[in-house]
Amino acid sequence: MASRPYILGSGQFGLTWTEEDVTHLPEILQDNNITRIDSAAIYPITSPGTSEHLIGKNKYVEKGFQVDTKVMWLAPDGRGHLSADAIEKSVGESLERLGLKKVRTNSSDTRRL
Image (cartoon, rainbow, N blue to C red; front, top):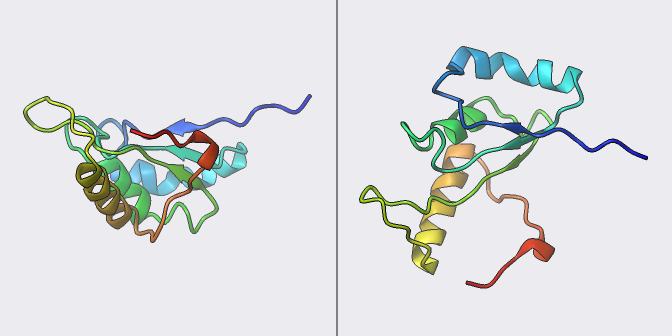
């Protein structure tokens, strides 16, 4: 039976993981067969977008990593916003921070709102 891949969560990038840590991390991850990064527009919660910014700045995708991210669904007032416009805005901002033109999609995971 094949082993399942490990995924690194980037919620601490820019918080407990410094920019220098994030810069040197790809080599260590690849040495350990970890090539998938989980991020979100809200990471880290104290500085939303910093995780994506650091992933983009350090060109993780160009280094062979698969980066998954999630939309920003919390507004500063604490209410959730998942309207089509809010999702489109969040995805656009994530793409900009990640330095990408598109993110990976999996149509079998797609859900209608």
